[in-house]
Length: 97
Image (cartoon, rainbow, N blue to C red):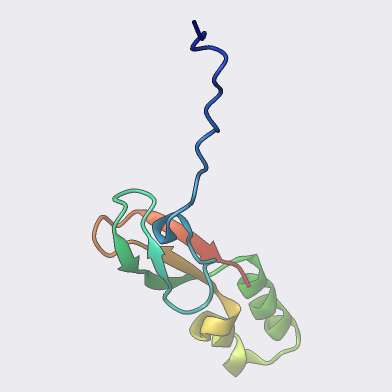
């Protein structure tokens, strides 16, 4: 008689599907899988001021460049890009500048 424990089945190999891979968040909307609702989406982006934005504005203020003080708050290149799911509004990621 053969013992069923003698036969060793090979371990199943795990092959990740394309849905498991998400792109890194960048400054533009990204095609990703939402971590909350698991839908394939293109992220909604909003821009949020960060510490560097305030520092740039302070430096412009200290340089007596009054007309340009609000410029860092108007430029998207001086602010973080926040990515959210358009379906469930869950946070997906942030691109920090």
